[in-house]
Image (cartoon, rainbow, N blue to C red; front, side, top):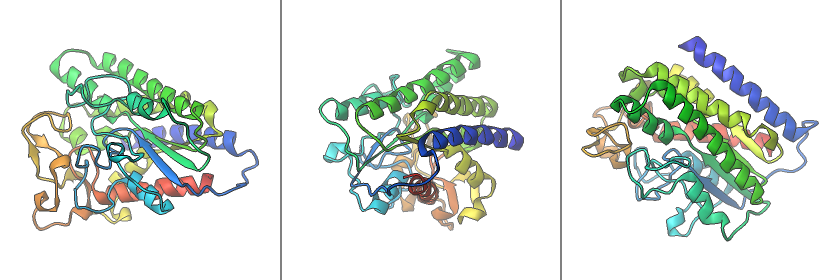
Length: 317
C-alpha cells in the first residue's frame, strides 16, 4: 500500500510540475495576487454550510479549508444561497445525478458553475476554487456494493468523472477566471471508510484514476490553473499524523449516527453534518483526529490542508 501511494504521488507531482512550468516560464513571479473575492465550487470537502451544516465538527469556527483561504485574503466566505460566492454543496457530484446520498435536489458541480457564469464573469482579482470526485466515487461504490455494476465498470465511470471535472475547470477559464485552484480526491482507501471495508483496493484505484484523468485534461491550462494535490498531503497526514499536530488518523471522532443516507456510505453511519463538539468521542480532543466521520476531515485536517493549499497559491501567484 505505501509503495503504491508514494508512486502515485510522484506521478501526480510530475503532472503538477508540468502545470507549473507551463505557467511560470522563467519561474519569476511578476505580481502577487491579492484576491478580493474567493469562489468555491465543489462537494462536501468545500461546503461551508450551503445547507446549514458542514461535513466536519460543526464548532462555529472557520473550519473548512476554503473558508480558511478566504480568511487569509481577508475576503468574505458566504454561502451562495445567502448571497455569497461559495457554491460547493455536500454530496454533489460533478455532472451525474442523483448525488452521493441519493438526492436529485443537490446541484451538481456543473450546475453550481452554471448558476454563476450564466450572467457573470470573473475579475482579475478573483480566486476560484473547484474540487470534486469524492461524491462520485461514493455513489459508484454504492452501485458495486449493491451488485448493480462491477468494479471495472466503476473505474470507467470514475475516469469519466475526472474528465468531466476537467471540463468544468476549462469552463471557468473560458468564463474569464485567471486564477483557478483545482483539487481532486484524497485516497479514500486510507479513510476510516476504506480501512474498515473490503473494497480498499478498488477505492485506491478509483481515487488514483480520477486524479489522473483530471490532471491529464487540464495540463494545457497552466497559465490560469493551479493543481493542489489533496492526495499527497492527506497521504502524509494519514501516515504521520503527529507531524501535523494529530494523534489519530484511522478512526472517526464524531458519534453522530444518521439513520438515513447521510454522507452516502450507507444508513446508520456517522454523519459529520450532524456533528458538534458535544457529539464527539468522550475524553479526547476532536482536534487530535484527522477524520470527523468515515470520509471527511476534522477542523484540524481542514486547517492543515488549507494552509498547504494557501502556501501553494502564494508561491504560484
